[in-house]
Image (cartoon, rainbow, N blue to C red; front, side, top):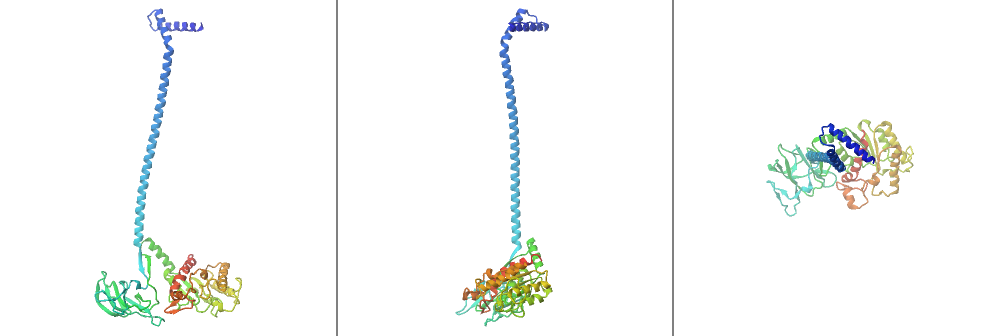
Length: 464
């Protein structure tokens, strides 16, 4: 009932508004229109609601599409940036590779191979003797000629050939027969020299020489710019820097080391003698450009002889060295005193004598580096020898107690004089004289003493 009243009121109100707006139809006509509208209104409202919902859904879809489009755009921009960075990284890598190749090329150009003091490479010599045109003539029956390879003498004014003396006691001049001079193109220059007596003068413009010699000459050697016999050195190749920053750094290091003076104190392994024409310190001094002050005296030790090590550490000339190494052997076995303990003082025990030698060193040289080296083994005192171990341990214990660097060659030198006659012939025979397994020859010094002592020396002088 109430609904009908509301409907009638709505109709009356609507008719009144219609009339006011200029409607000219009758009330009955208006009634028909109004009733029709009332019947259709709910459907129209539903369609309007659906239209609004569709519009809102379309708006949401459009907004999502915009968001997705922005996301895709951002992803594309990120991908483009990544691609650009990858391309840049690749360009950088290519540039770095090019730089590395150039550096390697520069380094290769900065390195050259040079020959040591001995220019005669016996491994490159061939059987036969030189003809005047430079060809090699075969040896006649019973002949023993050897002919050298082309030897570069461009930096020489003279050359000097030498070999082991027939009696094995020293060196003598090497017969350089059928010698020929050559230019840069290895073409023969001038006449053949039947026997080039040392020292032989190199004419200007000569690049190479070749000559023949008898193969029974042992340990032949050819040196440049020498006018007298010199100790034998094997033919060796060395690698060095000749330019660039690497060379500058190497030169700076060698210049620094060349100002240092090394005192080598010891016994016959350090004394300059015929047991080894080239000793450990010769190889090291050559490598590091050091000058050597030699206080080696044969037959001495920490305890043995009046000129024991302590006497020389006390009187060593301060002005002649910057650092010292003490390297003895087992001569103290004949001193007739016990080893003692590391705290001993005085000369009644070997430990006491070691401490006296150290005390005397520091008395006048308190700021100079000192290094102690244990003996290398003897044939009769190998590393398993009880007394030898006690002696080496005494040196090491005192070094540790007093904070002194040490090198233990007794257990780590690698040399084995007990290994048989062939071993003694190779590493203990100098100029034809075989030692009794105490004194390594030049090759023994080079192979077993020089490498380890060199590293020990470098550790001693790194702070100087």
